[in-house]
Image (cartoon, rainbow, N blue to C red; front, side):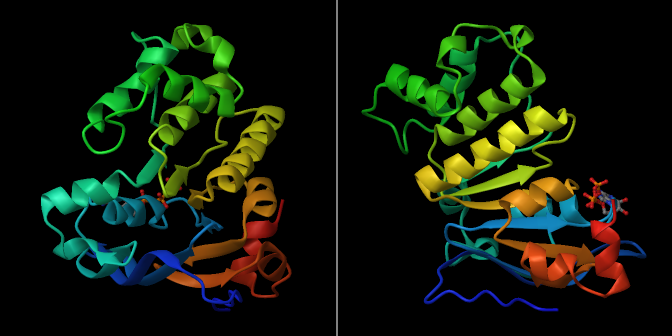
Amino acid sequence: MKDNKNISNPEIVLQIMDLHKSFGDNHVLNGFNMKLYKGENLVIMGKSGSGKSVMIKCLVGLMQADSGLISVMGKDITTLTQEALDILRADIGFLFQGSALYDSMTVRENLEFPLRRHSKKKHKDSNTEALVLEALTNVGLAHAIDLMPSELSGGMKRRVALARTLILQPKIILYDEPTSGLDPITAKEIIILMQDVQKKYNTSSLIITHDVDCARVISDRMLLLIDGIDYAVGTYTALSTSEDPKIKAFFKH
Ligand SMILES: Nc1ncnc2c1ncn2[C@@H]1O[C@H](COP(=O)(O)OP(=O)(O)OP(=O)(O)O)[C@@H](O)[C@H]1O
């Protein structure tokens, strides 16, 4: 089953072509392809150890692929200078499992931190206080601005981490297991928040998850990473009704 996105004149914001990555005899990615269109939520699922993290690391330049092409906003990242790469990276937000808050800083300081790092590029003239408040309001946590991370619940921490990502107004957000470790109700809240963010900012999101319910609710399209390739790409409905045993395995509860 292959990509059947049917929108007129779609803009591709992120593309991977024929990506290969091996560790010795362990051939993790064997010609992986992916396209992320502007404004869409693409969910990537794959068994544990299938290479999702390796793919993301190659995508953000934390790991070098053996071969293949990766382009972000139409630019081949392997040919960019460090400076051009840094500018491009400011357009990509990350919400990783491990993207913990700084425990010794208040919520406000946690949000000011990325602003200060990128201030030269983006927010030279902006009012930091207003930006922090706006980002927190967008995740429903304006009242928590002066709390310490230790005073927040798991769901609230995840929201603050999302606000910290949003404050730089990224064009693309990469989510790694956004609902892992959360109870079903809080997980649902985070999914709704992700949808709100997508609508409000028209961001394009790549979401790695094992959570089938999350995939059902949030995905415009899904990609199944199996045997190191983009084995199946399509809507939740198309994939969840497939008769292919390898695809079916993902949707069994
Ligand atoms: N730095 C590394 N050196 C050697 N092997 C590695 C390295 N990083 C990843 N691998 C191997 O690559 C394979 C894919 O790992 P990866 O972490 O991408 O899986 P994953 O799909 O993200 O799994 P999970 O869902 O459990 O997080 C595994 O076999 C892993 O052992």
